[in-house]
Image (tube, rainbow, N blue to C red):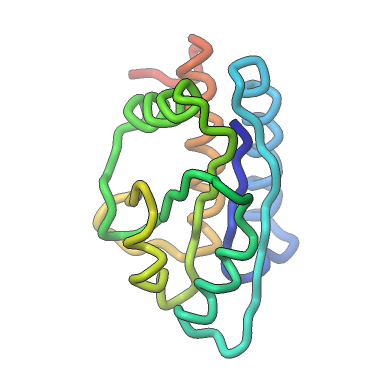
Length: 155
């Protein structure tokens, strides 16, 4: 299953971009043998920057027929093993693509959020959307290590 991250805003060079690249590289390396791979990071900066306009731009970045997952503070808070199981379940069901949406400063448009198969939360706190990319990349890598039996995740 190929994973595409569709996000509002462009991550500039710096520590967050370095971490993002590192975790996505690790995920791709670890996940390929498990049938999971990183496809692309698709960043959009539509004008005006309103949730409905951002939603249209994000949807255009997703592969056709992809499972859709929204990162949203109102979503389910999963443990890392539960997230790994969710990815494995979609992969094993034959889903070829997964699009993960990260909204802008005002969050995701409710229509996009509600149309997703799953909504995932990183907890009740609100996180900057640029930092959410890094957190997502680390959790993708962690999920791959859990599925591979690697000792990275210590439960």
